[in-house]
Length: 159
Image (tube, rainbow, N blue to C red; front, side, top):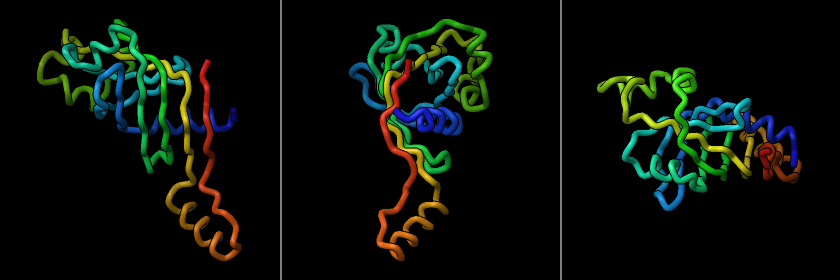
């Protein structure tokens, strides 16, 4: 495993604004991630009564799928979700995106808010060079007959 790829993963996932989260037998649904390298976690703010919240209560296996060209990150992240009751963590993560879903009720004090922690176990990661780098590599490969360098790809494991 490449430590450089793991570092690139954590650096880039902080810029991801949305992905698809599936847990247990739930279908994948769009969610906004809040990645925290120091927690070894990707956090989500969900509502009580959702399939994801129920899966988190039972500590289900989960997958989070990222395809974000702005962050130059594509990944399938596998791990386990759990529901966490931590008002301080909710304060830390709360932002305009979360507020858009819950402000109409009681905001952060809404009893329906559920904090979900995805603890990653492994991820298949593609850390790309971005649009300009992609075009450069394509042109270079045509001129040199060499395979283009599209960035790093590999499997990352988490402790």
